[in-house]
Image 1 (cartoon, one colour):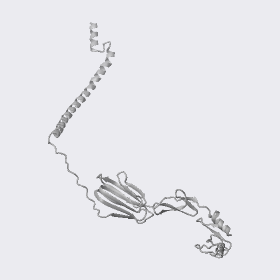
Image 2 (cartoon, helix red, strand yellow; image 1 turned 45 degrees about the vertical axis):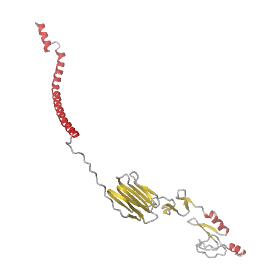
Image 3 (cartoon, one colour; image 1 turned 135 degrees about the vertical axis):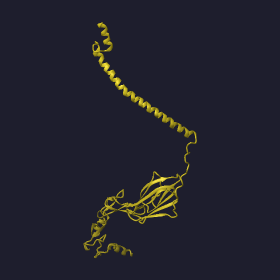
Image 4 (tube, helix red, strand yellow; image 1 turned 90 degrees about the horizontal axis):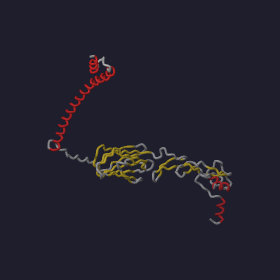
Length: 306
């Protein structure tokens, strides 16, 4: 009888069973798993219901789309053509003038226009001394046959394209812009001083004719180097021809600030700076523009009856 009870305890896993301590942890884990599986199953069933609802909705959308593709239950797409752009009335050239560095302005067109060989002219009142910058902002081209051409008095001609809209340091005093076709744009222009910030070394920058380019006017005893800047010293005239002439005629060669020279002659007042040689017959200082022939030349000419 006791053996039978032992088998029953093993079957029921009671505390009296010899394997109870070993089997109990597995039994607890199984019970926990059963407790967790219940909520998971509930979530699965909920998602299954939502999936069924979505399938029903998709079937309705698919049926509607099939209706649109196989019947006249929808309106055809509109084929209305946009109206042509307005024509810009340009019977005469539009003009703008610049007269000093910093002058600026614009020709604005904020929507697409039809231009029929229209022209815009920018004129500098200074033939030399100003450069002009051009910019085409917000450029929109609606017609492949449209053209914008820039004609200048010194810089040649240019075409404006979406990839070429900026033109700096134009030396021309007259710029004319010709526009044909369908465009939207704003032409901005401004005048600049070509000599602003230009370093001439020992000299001053001027915009000279005929090309209105930057040119250095050298000061004192300097002359231009290969780049046009005033960095090369002029030779001392008293070490060359001037010194030889002054010495030969009894004087002393003196170099002026501008690298010219004069002869300091013993018979003349020391303040006299106008003679290029010393003449014993000259006792008063001649005017700057006066150049008297030396007496020995006069005697030579007289000998031959000149």
